[in-house]
Length: 487
Image (cartoon, rainbow, N blue to C red):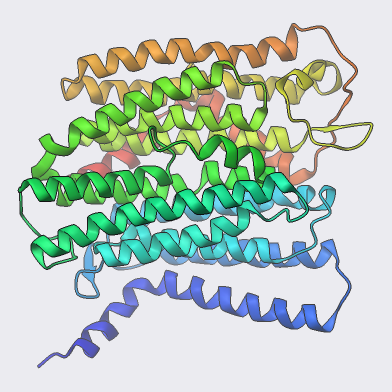
């Protein structure tokens, strides 16, 4: 007779990447503590060495996922799932985190941050995201989200000598605790009705519908979708810029992967109960993000409202509830991540010459073409891509989302989203106008760039520029993943 211990032993081979990442984090942390006690002086070289260790750990974890011989499997008594969708999203999370850590090097030096813990916190957060993506049990979801969120609370307050960073972390913690409470309440309600926490029940009662609403509210908070977006502008503005980039780039794809597994898998029979909720939230998010960004001059707040708007477009793909919707969602998130990496790399490269302070307003971009014309071109191209201007990559991402909505007969949703996209182009074009057409001021942007950022900008800019010329590879990959999930 096979015991639970034997089952768990057999299941361990399916989570070798997660085990490797978790053990590596512990080893790096122990090494860091020992070195800190041995060498009292602080050094940026030591911090960068730990950052490279984190990058190597994430790279090896990616290789383990790519070379895994195991396909679709439910493991640990249906608490986790391993399939093509979860593996694909884990790879995106790992690769994007590697890029974010590479972007940190010069930032740490200029901001006088000599603590190695930031990379460990990012790795722990990624570990939580990997568990979250594979979770098929509400208890597992809650634990994974808390592991991810606790690290992000600390990262938001990482600049301890800044009152803005402390305020951002406090707001994020309080509102994050509220969202976790909503998720836990919804999960507890489902357990009370079904006496099960795995995703394998078939109930259509009103109580189940109410529980689903609480779960949706708890999860949509994590990706800053309206009306659960109130934390994003303040946290984005107060957190250190590189942490803001991490928030905008990495965690959203993990939660979206969970939403696909949960609502297009487990709750698919309840489509007509949860679909209107996602439609309302998506349109609300698009409108609030668009209107909120129109009056912003602060770069971080502008990017926060831009992110809120983009998540609204992504939810249209989820609400479409078809193969095209899943493909459009995955494609949109990949392109959004690449555009976000590009724009944050641009802003991380800009300082004032006089005091080496980082720029905070879009009006400080005046005169950038004269000092660094190539950076001005890349930044302008990226914001136009975010606006959905053809033939850039952002146009392709929105195109496939709109086609998915039309395929599901969501014509009104597609029309409102298209009109909002046109309106939203105003604040993106305003950045281009400021860069090229406003009178040159005396801000004197300091624009030297390290080789890592230059390489990142080159690769992401090439993708944004030429994606629509040859989109077939990415379309084939995302379609195959969406089709396998549907089957």
